[in-house]
View 1 (cartoon, rainbow, N blue to C red):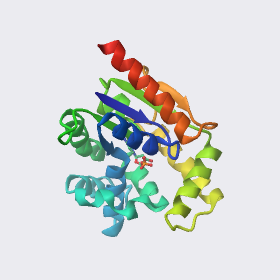
View 2 (cartoon, protein in one colour):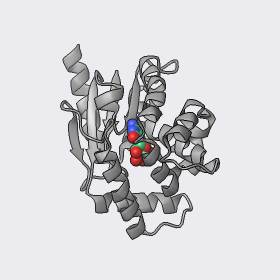
View 3 (cartoon, rainbow, N blue to C red):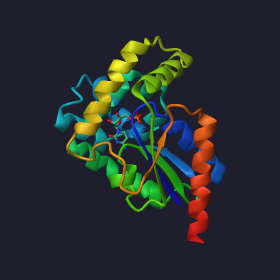
Length: 214
Ligand code: C5P
């Protein structure tokens, strides 16, 4: 079972993906963390995330140990991530790792949940279930601000909203693997839903899919 979850920043993809993975015994890959790690590696080396050669090198030599670092969660890391993510060579360098994870999830899992921007369209186009999780920009900024404050960062909601809108636009407008729902994705607008409601709807969709495949 492979579940692909895509959507814009702050829509609740990560929370949903983690809970679905736990519920169905699947492995979880936060594909955004890969782009964030590349962005942070470039910034740490004093480079420009928009520079193709520098960012491709960082993607090809990525230290996977960085993926759990709290430093990846800052808005600066998100901003750098969306710049490196627009570079086709960076996307190509990260694609094999993502596909290999989905095809051979870490034991004992026999399936995986991946979340990101192009999981249903590019990384796993044959995923068993594709969800596109979205919400209004204001609600996404509100949630992201609370999350950042919860992690001890000093976040101002207007600033978070502006950063998020700039990042969404870059993600939607880029030429390679832009943010968009796959044709066969189920769109979940979570603006007026809490995390439990989103989870319940997604669980119902997974069960329906599992029964349909029997
Ligand atoms: O999901 P998250 O906010 O951590 O992603 C950070 C950035 O990484 C996104 O804004 C996007 O530019 C990029 N990304 C992507 N493709 C993915 C996952 C993330 O381009 N599959």
